[in-house]
Amino acid sequence: MMLETVAQNRSFGGTQGVYRHASETTGTEMTFSVFVPDHRKGTGLPVVWYLSGLTCTHANVTEKGEYRRACAELGLIFVAPDTSPRGEGVPDDRVGAYDFGLGAGFYVDATEAPFSANYRMWSYLTRELPEVVLGHFPVNPERQSIMGHSMGGHGALTIALSNSETYRSVSAFSPIVAPSRVPWGRKALAGYLGDDETVWRAHDAVALIEDGARVAEILVDQGDADQFLTEQLRPSLLAEACANARIPLSLRLQPGYDHSYYFISTFMADHLHWHSRRLL
Image (cartoon, rainbow, N blue to C red; front, side, top):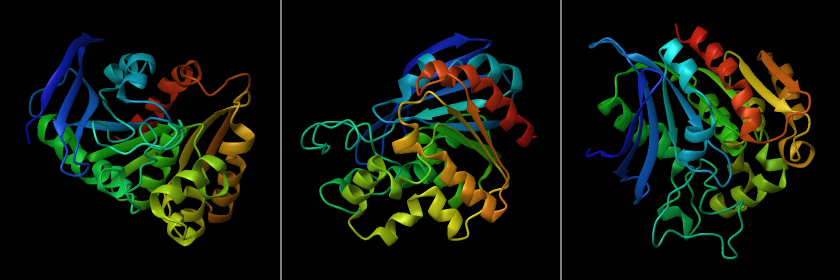
């Protein structure tokens, strides 16, 4: 598959790149970023996938996530995809709302028209993009982890719970843990998947755990000054589900922190060190 290099820059002894390719899955061009630390030829490096939140592209974490120093020290490849398909003709929310449509793909394969043709982020992230990355970068496919923020935390948790054989570890910042029970998620799941709420359970981390999905452990950081904490995020639901399922959960409520990249960048290195130990 052809891969266009949009930009490359040296950083912390590695290469930060932005790339574009034509996606068969979404029917659009897709852009993503990859940081590759310097490495010995012929050796594959572990990879951490990072899924972003509402309104974001690959650029938000690439420019504000402050992950490169830790990735260079730990020898981790860091991949940041976009949050939805984009381009002329890709359907959006009719009134241009920030929480549905462009920038808000919710990491599902839509089944409802007109979104079903392009909004196939689940398949893109679990099948097509890994094939692209493995074909162009020195990744060890046996050493993969996944993490995300907010809507991306939802994506990371659900993808890991549904593909536990692929990812050695999963973590999240301020994740939407039970989209079936909060306004952001109910709007998105109904819009993309229809009104049958039993179908939504496959894209709801708490419901997946209730239905038997398992991972070895989960790390979550959540700011207690997050403006979305009570209505949209509700981490206590994940804590309850993990306790009932005996999944070790480290849920760290961080005093004074909000939902922004000031919060994410503060604890990014902690998460990368945590993943690195599980990628050995």
